[in-house]
Image (cartoon, rainbow, N blue to C red; front, side):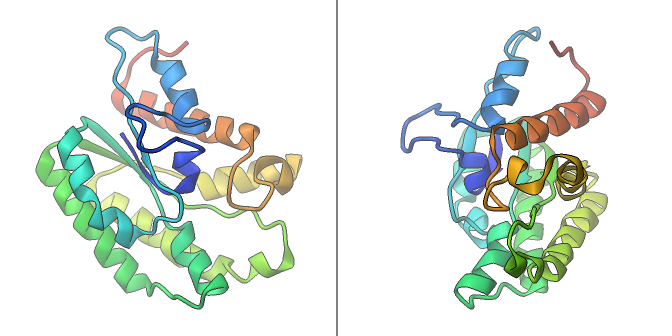
Length: 201
């Protein structure tokens, strides 16, 4: 299961059951389709979600009882501070995220975390970075505390952007292009292969 915001949703149509969207979740599902006993893949991304929203709809995760839960959230917690003056303090972000992980661990499933990321394409977005780094630090600290692997998307995508250009990977700095989604999928698959094993195409 992939739980997050619009980066995960990626044009997934709601409330269509089983819709995977057009982004990294779809790519991962296609890659896993030919492994022995291919897993069911569920996309629970909703555009605009912040960590508080994921906490509020935790029941959707409980109902599906995933064996592996991947969480990608945090950019909207930063973005809303700058476009709506709606600030999510880092300690509140951490508390909500910790509550999600407490429930996830109690459910017995495995958890994978992915860093929120930003590929600045406008001068104003540079101002988001200090706050985003605080949120990224929270995700990494929680990964250590809960024994969950963390996919370092912010680092990986910014390294790729230094060669390819940020706009090629995320035209608005936040929402990935098809190439950006491919890189996210590759990063997740590499981490999952190392963590859980299994054959890839």
